[in-house]
Amino acid sequence: MRLTLCGLPSSGKSTIFSALAGRKLSTGKGRDETNQVLLPVPDERVDKLSALFNPKKTTYAQVTYLDPAQPVVKAEDPLTKLPLELRQADGLVEVVRNFDGGLGEPDMISDHQDFADELLLNDLITVERRLERIALERKRGRKVDEEEKSLLETAKEHLNAEKPLRLLPEVAGHVKLKGFGLLTAKPLIVVANNEEDDDQAPDLGEETPVVIRAGIESELAELSEEERAEFMADLGITESALDRLIQAGYQALDLISFFTVGEDEVRAWTVERDALAPRAAGVIHTDLEKGFIRAEVMRYEDLMEQGSEAAVKKAGQMKLVGKDYQVQDGDILHVRFNV
Ligand SMILES: Nc1nc2c(ncn2[C@@H]2O[C@H](COP(=O)(O)OP(=O)(O)OP(=O)(O)O)[C@@H](O)[C@H]2O)c(=O)[nH]1
Ligand SMILES: [Mg+2]
Image (tube, rainbow, N blue to C red; front, side, top):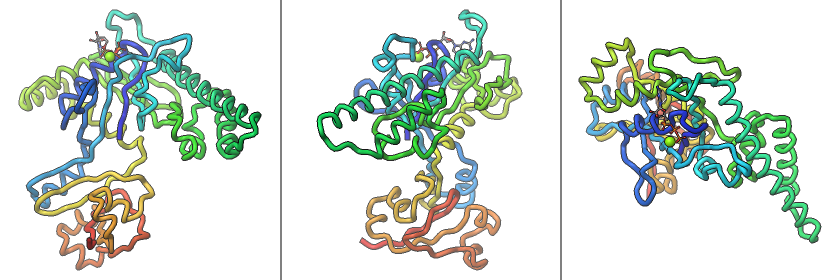
């Protein structure tokens, strides 16, 4: 899963990216991919499970953050200027400048609006081009996909009314439109990049921004564990705002986490919200999906309340489920399979 940082020029994307990169699991391999980091998603449940099982290894859910090489600029032909990374993202993290930094008094509402317009205009162009193409095909006597055409028309109408497609989930999430990478259809997290002495979230109307003070975060990222604790105490903060950003980004993707536990490893895994048990098992290993028989499932809350797996079983809270079970956020799975 990949979240791409975006926003107007000089809003602080790269500053936030380097602060994030300070906690990376790994950088992308290969050419031109140093602008990409894989990050653990902080999750208190994983911490508590790990304290209970004391495993050799603890693994959090993971998400990739990407800082595109070029910013979004106002352009004659937006489609040629918007970084491709935005189109390929699973979600967008829009960074809005809320510091002066020699760039003048910040105006988040106006910047946020400009950026939203840019995305909207891009989608409108994509949709119109595709509709023109379909009309041409039809004129040539070829068969066209009526469902796709009707979805595109609905999308166009919606965009013309200046509404992002994410407000229209049945269109935004439709498999026939997936390939277009429509930008306003993607989940969006708004970050207010605040001045160092300001921790207030500005009012943006429908979106509540996550407040980050990139200046502080980039300093925190450079400190040792010990120095960091001291610096945070001085500032009167208990957690880095990056934790909240990573969590909010992960939640916006509409995924769920389930867990596997044991002496070797406590681990969080990620799957789509409506996934069935075999699909979830397949995230762990393809063999587990192919050879899936059943899964033992307990709820994270039950395990915490009972204190051990044995106690959960004794309380009758361990369920044996089959192939049609829909995995829930917070499920702990033991998959039974044969190969
Ligand atoms: N005072 C202050 N300055 C900041 C903050 N965040 C970034 N800056 C400065 O603002 C300038 C732009 O920051 P970048 O992180 O490069 O912004 P960007 O969005 O990556 O810029 P482009 O990639 O060129 O669009 C740099 O000089 C930063 O040092 C902040 O929170 N406070
Ligand atoms: Mg940059």
